[in-house]
Each structure stands twice: as structure tokens, then as C-alpha cells.
Length: 204
Ligand SMILES: N[C@@H](CCC(=O)N[C@@H](CS)C(=O)NCC(=O)O)C(=O)O
Image (cartoon, rainbow, N blue to C red):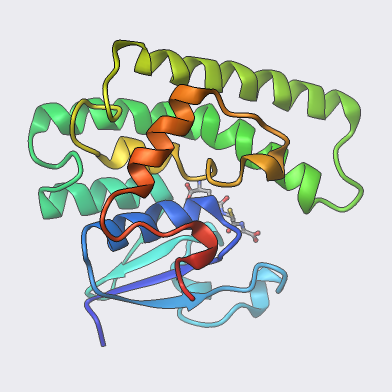
């Protein structure tokens, strides 16, 4: 059994962030797909007990459970000294983006996608307008970050900030979103990293 075990779902960008980190860092791990259509109480063990908020992703590191995608990214970066974990300064900058992501693009974009694609009955027009307005503002903020021509969020090297922010961005059409050229170019640089896979190809 590998030291790391990930429990995720192929439709979940939150799971994808962690899968991507493991893939890019070359961390060998076991993977279990959790069926989110199954009621929480019927999901398999040890996921049911260890995923304390009932959500994917769950990562076991030598049996110790870690939940919340951005917290898991921080754990892996800090302990591996990679993808932002190379210095306290890079980690501090990455952490800021992870908190922004959780409240902004990691809220607006997934909920727009969920509402348009998965939610029974779709989105009420007022809710869609709210989420779309917020998502547009979030994409504009992210786009502005690349105005100085940098390759990745923290500069020349990729970090967990990139991995977190791109979690739902490889499915823009599913949320009815058109990404601006600088964001597409950034996604292109991420997808050129050795080990990268599209979310739907991650665990095939
Ligand atoms: N803040 C959490 C969000 C995780 C989340 O929303 N996971 C969803 C799938 S994307 C989930 O597992 N939902 C539980 C359910 O559907 O029962 C994180 O960053 O990990």
C-alpha cells in the first residue's frame, strides 16, 4: 500500500487540485473514486468516518487524514518543500491566494458549473446572475495578475496557488465561461508541466 491514499471524484475540481499536485510532484498514491450520488451515510469506509465534512477530497498521509483541498495542498507543499514550499516567503504568498480562491473563484465558478450542469432544475435566474457577475469579476482579477507577463502566479515557477486556482478552469464551457487569452496562456503553461493530465484523464 502506498503512503498516500486519495479519495476523490472525477467531476470535482477540488479533488482535481490535489490529484494534480500529486501527479506533478510525482507522489505515488492509491486512488479511490467516491460516488457523490450515493447518500453520505452509505459511502464506503474509511471515507465515511475520516472525511469529517463529508466531502472529497480526503488524503491519507501514512494513515493520517487531511481534508479541504487547499489545506491538503499546503500540507503537501510544506512537507515536500515543493510548489511553494521552497521558502516561508513563497508559502506566505501562496497561502494568500488559497484563501482568496476559497472565497472567490473556487466558489463562483464551481457553483455556476454545478448549477448549469448538475443541480436538479438548474439555477434560478437571479442566482445565476449573481454567480456569473461574481465569476466574471474573479476572472478579471486573476487576469490582471498576468499583466506583468509572469508565467505563474508566484513568478517563474509553479506553486500550489496555480494548482488551486486552476481547479475548475479546464472545464470553462461547462460553466458557460469564456476565459481571456492571458488566462488561457497560463493554463497552457500548467498543462505543459511534466505529469499534467486533464481532470477527466487523471485517473483513467
Ligand atoms: N472546501 C472544500 C470543498 C469540497 C467540496 O465541495 N467537495 C464536494 C465535491 S466538489 C463534495 O464532496 N460534496 C459532498 C457531497 O456532494 O456530498 C474543499 O476545498 O475541499
